[in-house]
Length: 311
Image (cartoon, rainbow, N blue to C red):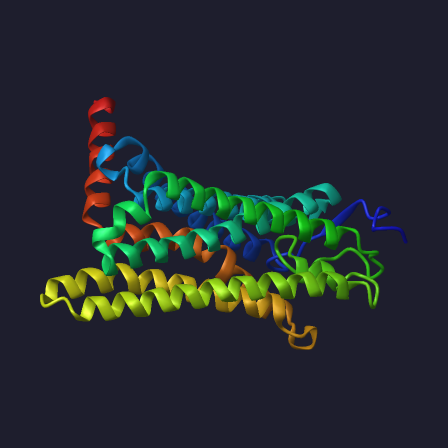
């Protein structure tokens, strides 16, 4: 078989075997998807429309919201449509597009989270140098580097994965086209090529994770020197949720991409994939806005504006 060209489509994993359960899954994912659209949409609108939020922290939050919207829209709508129409097929091109977009958005998001931890570190530990270290030009360059690295990563993985000869059928054991599941369809030794590329990418992401943890340790050290309890609360309430989401995304993604195929089971793989691909985009807006008064005020103003215009 040459480069999988004889496969016209892939079959994705059905969420359930009965129509009722499939519709239940559809409803559940529709709820999560709408929550993600609303939450990230509000953050985008608030940051774009309010001049007070035109600061580095909110600029990166805007990037994060865009990436979250993109990544959840790459996987969920297709899965929901399949559940609704009781269908499992995705075209070969559609599958390649899903792999490309998903890797691009998830990797970029991870780099943005890393930059955000650096931004918080400078703001809390070196407040006097903040303006010079995180100026608007530096922010633009860091954001461009994050998106650019994600793009290069995606090109590399998509090209490597879809150049492999596939001889184990076309059923992908996942609700979207996920690289480890496509590698299972490749001929015996061919997948080692992409496995090496994956290992390289995962080590990069792990290095970012270490950087994030170290940044937070520095932040905590700086915070513990703040005499007021209010200062403590403020710093911890913004940092801990961020750390929680990052840890969940990293641990589940590393498990999905590095685990040996022998401990794979469709239901476990499904849960892991939902944890790293569906949950973060839906909960990120909540986590970042929950303890953030400026953002809450801005979102409140948007609602008021919409109400006035409706009346």
